[in-house]
Image (cartoon, rainbow, N blue to C red; front, top):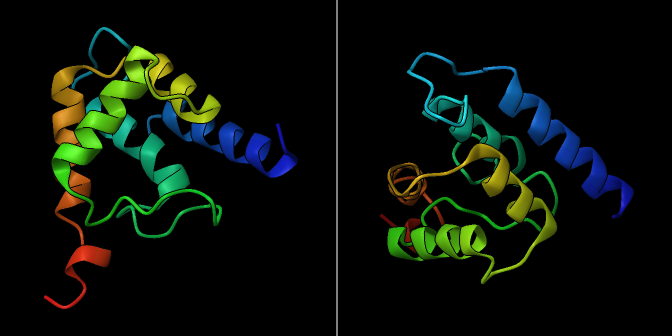
Length: 116
């Protein structure tokens, strides 16, 4: 793993485990939904529009069904990325989490809706 990737991953894990946005109930994973959102935001930006590294995708404005499919594919192992696979496993994302994350990031201004 590259040093920048290692640092980014450590930051994501740290934010996910510190309860940055812990104002809602934890589930079986031990993380609240806001913790899970904070974990995404650590690498992709609070609104999904400012990735930590240039090779990380912009989530803001992506189509919700695309984001849902991508996260489910990481969860099943069909799609592979060391950081994302570990995040999805550690956070134990449920279908409900995935739907909420996809809705959140797809509602943000992004490349597909800059002119709106």
